[in-house]
Image 1 (spheres, rainbow, N blue to C red):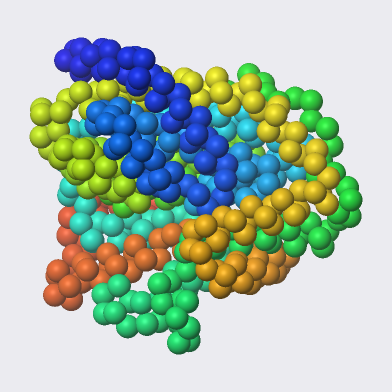
Image 2: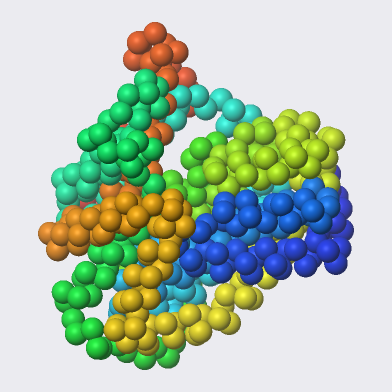
Length: 493
């Protein structure tokens, strides 16, 4: 009951005219920013912070605005992923798999509708988890060390083997290519260069946005050029822009499961919405007995969208309760709060309770606003699909170049994007899935750094990867990922 009383006080803070306006502005601009590849919430927050500081906004108001941009961008990410196969950020890359397949079948309205609904449910339910389980989950999260993270990444790689309908071998080859790309640059522990070929542009590694736009957007352009007449429209007219009750019921369990898993991943510092969405997608593909993931299944959109919104909410636990940012976006928020005189950490709930509870209440309001914003605009978004390809293709190319160049300011990255696009197009034509490659790029640096740190802490003893209860549970789950699909096929199919 104490939590409910504090939440009511949080609503009193969130419903003040200033904070209510900030919730709406944050959600709206977050949606727009999420649609634009390469910008992302971290850049928007970094740009807005000086304005917030000059205006003298109180810390709870500043955090409400930043949070609105953060989870609002999770809504917007899916729009360009579904309609154009151009992920706004890495967390929406997996949404493009089934979302764009649905759009090509004339079901872009349904994909956008289930995306908005799943985002709303995942984001809203995860707020309840934030309220009632924040202290307990913070204690679990703080127990995750390098060994635990290493085993978690092993689980992620085993799960991704189910992505490609073309078999485990091609999925793992694709993942290996992603790991190779992730290893380019300066070794994070020794400082030596790897796979740079003495090219200074590669010393800092390859930015993720270059990889994701190259393999998705540019390869999509090449596929358009190869497969059809550019004078044709992208699809037939779409009349239905909502999902039926049956389709909603068919997706609801995927939404609930992905909400929980996404929230738990979000609690882990450094994991983030990208890993949450990939794990949700692979888990649902394992759990569901009959599905067409990869070919245009609504659940293939609902699961990652629910997970990445829940993960965005979960990431506020390490930020506020532990004072540990779990991503670039929350790192910027941490710096902003610190400069405003607030120190996130275990004492925040006692010393600055209005920040935590005002934020939690504002998230309820923000998610409600976003569902009313996105669903009525679904028809507007779907009209993009009526654009002739001779107009749409230059638009995608322009967005891709702007997204890459604004990230790094390097023309070399534009060339690299084109090279990745050609490789991605060849992989498409030969049946290699792109999702494992993207996840390999995301997890490559994390698994390498944590694996090596764990061995340093244990003085080279590999038993550190089996010594804690957390690692043992993760190993059991990983074994289950391998064994259960085989058992299901052997005895229940």
